[in-house]
Length: 541
Image 1 (tube, rainbow, N blue to C red):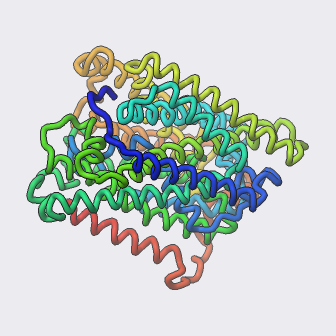
Image 2: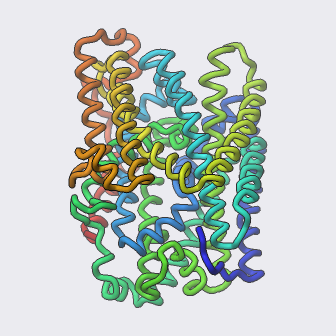
């Protein structure tokens, strides 16, 4: 981020920022110590399965919000309008599917990792493959992205050296996770969620007041305050984004170990579902507290570089003191994302590889090896971030291109493996293969476009450059439909798993629904939140 100016920060700002961050980490470690977070592997990796729903929901939210979320979303909104935040309201749908279809079978089998569940549903090879892939993705893309993107943002905002920030972030986050385990991560996330919501929320209200309220904002930027964009929109086609949540969003919220680990830390299914619904409530906020500041800046300061939107918001709209709180929110978002990735990596390494190879490994040894895995992941993550730093224009875009489509081949086999008893191992393997071939075509097209220009990409893959195939959301949708067709076609001609295996890993469509529990029932909560979501989409249509 090459900027000619920096944030104007006073001593008060720095004092507030650092105090909030130190407080959040210290309290998280203190609670973890009281919970004896290193007593055994369950305590270290899943906080002893004792997390209450508010902590689960807040941790899910904090894990989702990264530094680029705060900075990038406001910049995209300044440039493209509120349509850049369309995906933020899809959480009700994604976590609703997770709670209804996926989560009951994760909790029933008391798994530590999603790959562990895949062994129960398919076979050991599926577990090893998926876990290995997710560890590589987590280190080479997620951790590298979090470290590098966060450092790049801080470099642009306050001038800190990129690699120095990368190293310090790695050390601080690794130390927090090593000492306190998942409990420290979850409770630190909870406090940092409060920092993000309060700091950014106050900033939004102050900015909205300066622009004349909602009506004043709508009057100044009438075309930018609508979410709906046509299917031909090259950036955020409304229905493309919504349908894209059916494959990308459900994988992200319901199959990605980094997020699902928060739900697995619940003592029971009810608490996990309530936590998910609380996360849906929190995810209604980013459109207002992270994206709307971009529109406020556009209304007050048109014609500026979109990349400087977040800095404009802090320097020209917020008063001293609140700038420090919003900067603390930025750093909290960055730290929470990295903590989540580190903890999930250590869990998969120990539970899916070490414990499978050495089933008699003692509990204290598992905790020790989990800490070693965190150190190793940090070193590799910092190394990957360094490679990106040395070749920003090439490798960074390459990793971004790969990460967008890597999840596409995985979602159908996991989702339909739970929904349908008819899905077989061979069907899942075939769908993986076809999915990765499709992803390879998509990534190759994107890289050709980056290196040689869009016309060169069009010449090689002309079928990918029509109205309903040009945007990544449409490509992912068509790819997913092809994968589903292959999954069921191959499954129809191959032998399905034994009934005793399917009994605990797939939906029993003949079973009676659980009795309605009034306002405590997650289904009622989801219905209300879905109605609110539809209303907000309608209001911003």
